[in-house]
Image 1 (spheres, one colour):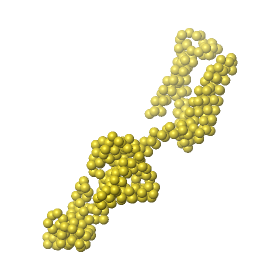
Image 2 (cartoon, one colour; image 1 turned 135 degrees about the horizontal axis):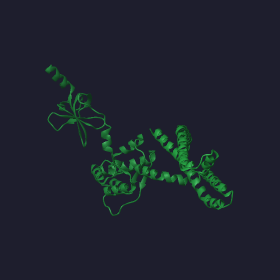
Image 3 (tube, helix red, strand yellow; image 1 turned 60 degrees about the vertical axis):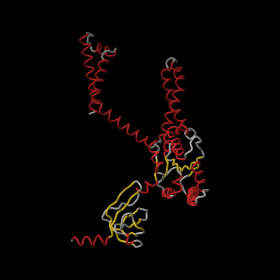
Length: 366
């Protein structure tokens, strides 16, 4: 369809060109040589004839011209594919600089009689080529120019890779295992005020808090020594804020990063303020194996449940299994059949019944 439209337009252009050619001195001279008197009727007839001839010529040569243009553009495209984008940008800059330098010289040369009109475009072409050649030969020295195109996206990508760790996720320790697997990339940011909070916890008189604080400091030391992911201490503090959570939110907004946390309340505050959050607990729940009703498993009942006769067991990932009539099996390993699965904000709960009782009930019904 497009080719047909171009062909029609080309025919009209050819007709207009031929019509104009019929009014030139050359056409008048040809008519005089053919002994055709230059009357208005003969002039109009000559214009129409010339326009029709040119229109037919343009009509028939248009497909050939289009094919040659398409082949040329494909050839140029194939050659340009192997050229780096920064080289093309530098070459374009060199051509512009060459033309800019050549412009005043070209105007001066154009005024020279006879040869000026030929020297002027020649100088423009030569200077454009020189500009292209000189700039490309200095592309290593002009690397700062190509960095302009990369800096915006690079800074945006770098900001997305900044992960701000809070106190809870450091003490938890699973962030180190996640980083070791390579699923988390970027720079782990440890704010100075978080480090200070860990020190206060490690110096607490309460034994449990003291152990948690020391565990967090030990994990930080291991992360700095063993992880391939870079870990940096961010010393900036926000004196106008007293709460560590508020400081974390402000810092993350400032550097346009993401908070890594286990704190449910901090997670909600970040969501309200539009701060990206990576919650380790949500990740742990997401990667837990899927258990469907009817599946069988072997568990060890370790304590009684809230309801009468219930027993409680746990999977290796910490998922709680409530076993109906499992209280009598506390301390024993038991084959159970999953009856239902409940997903809550705190995690996943599995409800099951002893396999023996299910088989007995089934045989009784049968």
